[in-house]
Image 1 (spheres, rainbow, N blue to C red):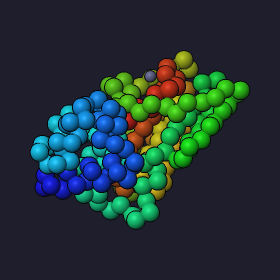
Image 2 (image 1 turned 120 degrees about the vertical axis):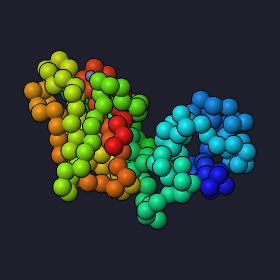
Image 3 (image 1 turned 45 degrees about the vertical axis):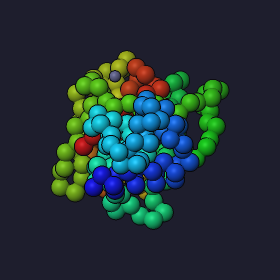
Image 4 (image 1 turned 135 degrees about the horizontal axis):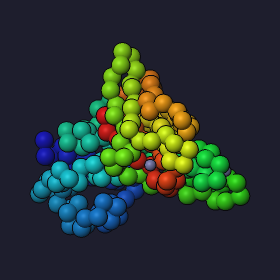
Length: 195
Ligand SMILES: [Zn+2]
Ligand SMILES: [Zn+2]
């Protein structure tokens, strides 16, 4: 088990073209810690798993199992997807490669992914063949969620949200999807919720 985890970390890091130091910096640990995991001298602390799986572009349970399940051979492109939102008009843009995007005369920076706090957490439940996303976040004119996104290995589903709208939305089921939302208060942050 531990050997598989070490293998997976090294393989994904190399596929992403990262040095041990570069990966370590992304998840705020020492390069020595990464080296320890890759040589099976230790396992990443459970608290680091979300950040490490994010940095490696694998799901947390793949990381824990040391294997990537149901990952199609040419899949995984969407793991690199970046979201951009124009603070002036709310326009949503995405890119999977390097891109320089602008809207309303200003250059847009990719939104930073952050684990959702209580206010921005989505509750995700199975309803028949769909996923029901609900939230308690206000949907008022000045403060509301701006969009929802479900990102799978090979597809992404984005829904624009508007003030006075419902606090729920149904999406088709996407295997191993990650769920995100944006909020009017901070257009530079993408909040990630786990199913
Ligand atoms: Zn704009
Ligand atoms: Zn908010």
